[in-house]
Image (cartoon, rainbow, N blue to C red):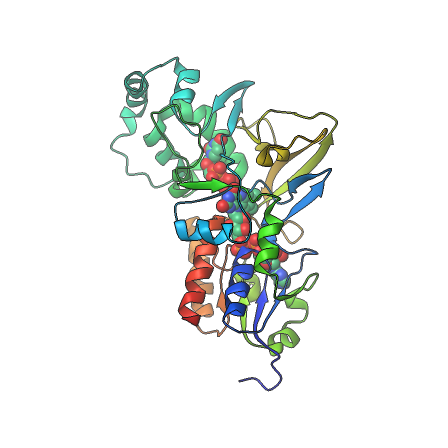
Length: 369
Ligand code: FAD
Ligand code: UDP
């Protein structure tokens, strides 16, 4: 027990991991303090209201899960709408449906039945059939063959990650479904939607009875903050926590270029990907379509990928061999700490929202039940 501890938990980071942890800990009569260095709560799910449109300030966020408990959990704070993500891909001016499905195959090859589409796909993947994929490129070629890889994967992937597809882990491409039905739903999960009124409602619901301080960087007042609570929950970068003593973990970042346009409907869809390497952005988001907005104007965002640095936010962990080895060294150090490490940055995991919520719920269940 610490002498002057006013709180049971100091939670560093007001993203979904921190918010779910704080909510559950408070429910079990623990006094929590949440701090975040940003000027707002919500981490990467934060939305800003521009002309009545909830603008996803840190990139498009679509909630999806197969887990009924997690779906009911989030809906207990705010009801979700029936939005279904059906992005399109623009390659050299032509549009293709995503994920890879019968519509995409028709647009690429004119095939109309699953049998016809499978025949083309089998022909294109035949030469890769004996490969045991060790990277994204091999995995993609084995799954979908040359045409789809060249037009819809290679350019997007290499600009998104700033690395050759042959240097990236195979699991990244397994996020995308491949199906032989005319179904443009980007996810296979049972439940999907956007919180009605935006993600801030979810975060404010979770943190309603919790003391929160924004514009507070943990590292600028580490010992004072740490002394305030019996235990720390850290959701920032694990390498930064240990002062980069083994070196820096690499992250991909994004520059978001937001534009307000004087038109009610710019692109007719929330997400359009630009899959050729020549175009410097990966996608254009038109935010109003997440909530079926009828406003007179619209807000669009172009996402330009780049390497994270001290000025650029770390968004995507680069889970390649080099970074995985570095992560292990930090995880060994973390084992010796009383601090709890959780979330996308502290675990260095390509977590989706439902997975972060699941991780925080399972941690708090272990601690409090
Ligand atoms: P974060 O949301 O990153 O929160 C961490 C918080 O810690 C931040 O607010 C940060 O400011 C704070 N922090 C860090 N260091 C310090 C410090 N030293 N002091 C104080 N505070 C600190 N998931 C989906 O399910 N669907 C999607 O469509 C989707 N789209 C995405 C698009 C993009 C561009 C990105 C980047 C992610 C997307 N995700 C999506 C993933 C989703 O954002 C994460 O799973 C989730 O937000 C992670 O929550 P978290 O609490 O771990 O991290
Ligand atoms: N991807 C692609 N073409 C696309 C969309 C995605 O090649 O049009 C690949 C790319 O490597 C990307 C990965 O699939 O990083 C995962 O895509 P997802 O849409 O899940 O990325 P996120 O929403 O997490 O940025």
